Length: 324
Length: 259
Ligand SMILES: Cc1cc2nc3c(=O)[nH]c(=O)nc-3n(C[C@H](O)[C@H](O)[C@H](O)COP(=O)(O)OP(=O)(O)OC[C@H]3O[C@@H](n4cnc5c(N)ncnc54)[C@H](O)[C@@H]3O)c2cc1C
Ligand SMILES: Cc1cc2nc3c(=O)[nH]c(=O)nc-3n(C[C@H](O)[C@H](O)[C@H](O)COP(=O)(O)OP(=O)(O)OC[C@H]3O[C@@H](n4cnc5c(N)ncnc54)[C@H](O)[C@@H]3O)c2cc1C
Image 1: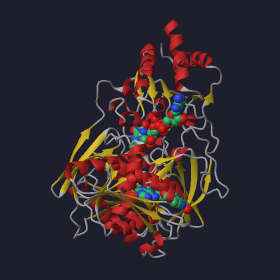
Image 2: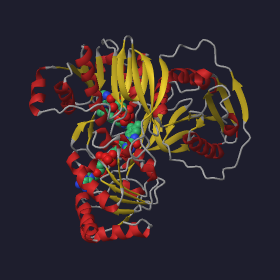
Image 3: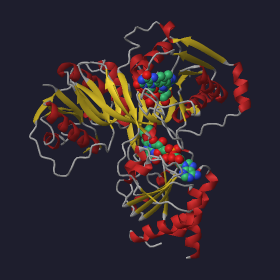
C-alpha cells in the first residue's frame, strides 16, 4: 500500500480551488487502489489551513514557516524533493497552474521521477498510472503511460475534477514538521502582487456578453462586433489573443488569467474553446458559439452552436436588430 | 546580455479536421501548414528587444528536422545573431528528452538568460522550460509577462490566475518561460528572411552530443491519440444566416435578457 501526495496550492490566505479538486480525485484513486492520501502543506505560520485539509485527507504534513507563505519554486522544490525521497509516494499531484508550471517540471528533474502535465483524467493499470491529456488545444485526446519508476508526478488541469458539495469528511492526522536545516538560499525573492484585471467596465457584472476571439481576424473588424454589442445592449468581452494583440484592454478578457463571468447569455464569436478560456464561462447561463470550424472544442461546452462565418451571423443579427 | 531562445515549429490546427494517423500515436501531418509556436515568437521578440537595449548576442535553438530551419531563419530575420538546429533523427522525444538535449547543447555556451515559451501550441505540455532550468541549475520562473534586468538580477512579472501578477527579483543567469502579450512581435518580411540566410545556422546531430541512452529514453509515452468522445455537445442551429440570427435573438429573449 502506497501513498498519494497532493501539494496544496494557496494564495493570500486562501486555499485555491484546485487543491480540493486534486484531493477529491486523489481520494477516489485511493479508494480503488487502497493508497493513503496525504495533503502536503507548505504555508505561512499559523496558516489556518490545516483543519480544512484534514477533512479531505488521511494525513496532512504541514510545514508552516513565514518563508513559505508565498509560493517560491526554489524552496518548494527543495522541501518536496526531500519529502518525496523520504516517503516515496506512488503519485504526487500538483495543479497545472502558473505555480505548478514553474514547480513540477523542475521537481521532476530534481527527483528523477517522470512527469505528465495538464492531465484531465488519471487511472491506474497494472500498478502504474495512465493519464489522459488534451492536445492541439482540445481537438484531440491522448492516453499517456510512464516509464516504470518508484513514483510519478502529475499536474492536474483546473476544473477537471469538480468535487460535489456533499463530500464525506475525513479526520486526517496532522503531522507538523519543521523546515529542514541547511536549505539553499532561494534565487527568487517576492516583491509584490499587482492586480491587472481592473478597468472601466466590469464584464463579470454583465447580463449579456458578446465575446470575440482571434477568429475576428483583424483589429479593424472589432468595430463591427462592437456595433452589434451596442445594438444588443451587450457588453463586449474577448479571449486572450485579442488582448495580447492590444486590440482590447485587459479588463475585457475572459478566462483563467482574465475574469470569470456569469452572464445570462454568452455569445462567443470566433473563439476556439481552449480550457483557459472556457474556465471563465462555467458560470454563464447559456453559451452560444459561432465558429466556422465544426470541430472547434467550444462546441463541446456550448449550449447552442452555429458552424458559420462569424461576420455573416453578426451582419444578420445587426440587420434584424436595426430594423426592430 | 547573451540570450538563448528555444523555439519549436508547430502545425496550425484551427479550422482543420485533424485525422489520427495509422499508428494512433499522432496526427496525419502531410496536409498541415506550420508556423513558429506563438509563445516562442514572443520569446524571440523579447530576446531581440533586450539585445537591442543591452547588447550581446541572441542564439535561437530548435530540435527538429530540416523543415524546422524555417523558424530559425525567421528568428534570425527578427534579429537573432546565430542559430542551432539539433537533428533528432528517428528518435522519439518527450519533454524530458527535449530538455536533456537542450541542456547538453546549451551547457557550454555563454549566456545570461534563456527564454522558452510557456507552452507549445500542439502538445500543450508546458514542461520543457523549467525542466531545462533545473538541468542547468538556473533560477527560473514560468508564465512571465515582464522582465527588466537590474545588475546581476532581473525584476520579473509572473502572471497568476484571476487577473493577478506577481513581481519578484530573480538572480541571473535565469530561465524564463515567456507568456503571450509580453511585447508586440515585429513583422518579418520575406526579404528579411532571405537576407537572414547569411547568418549562422549550425546543425548538430543528437548522436554527437554524447548523451547516454538513459538521457535519451522517454519518461512518458503516448499510448494512443483519439478524437474526443462524443459527449452531449451544443445543439447546432443550422440554416441561412437570417434564420440563424432570428433563432439567436429568440434564445436570448427566452433567457430573460431584453434586447
Ligand atoms: C497560462 C495561460 C493562461 C491563459 N489564459 C487565458 C485566458 O484567461 N483567456 C483566454 O481566452 N485564453 C487564455 N490562454 C490562451 C488559450 O490557451 C488559447 O490560446 C486562447 O484562448 C485562444 O484564443 P481564441 O480561441 O480566440 O483563438 P484561437 O484558438 O486561435 O481560435 C480562433 C477560432 O476562431 C475560428 N474562426 C476563425 N475565423 C472565423 C470566422 N471568420 N468566423 C467564425 N469563426 C472563425 C477558428 O475556427 C478558431 O476556432 C492562456 C494560456 C496560458 C498558457
Ligand atoms: C521531433 C519530435 C518528435 C516527437 N515524438 C514524440 C513521441 O514519439 N512520443 C511522444 O510522446 N511525444 C513526441 N513528441 C512530442 C513531445 O512529447 C513534446 O514535444 C514534448 O513533450 C514537449 O512538450 P511540448 O512540445 O508541449 O513542449 P512544451 O513543454 O509545452 O514547450 C515549452 C517550450 O519549450 C521549448 N521547446 C519545446 N519543444 C522544443 C523543441 N523541439 N526545440 C526547441 N525548443 C522546444 C519551446 O520554447 C516551447 O515554447 C515529439 C516532438 C517532436 C518535436
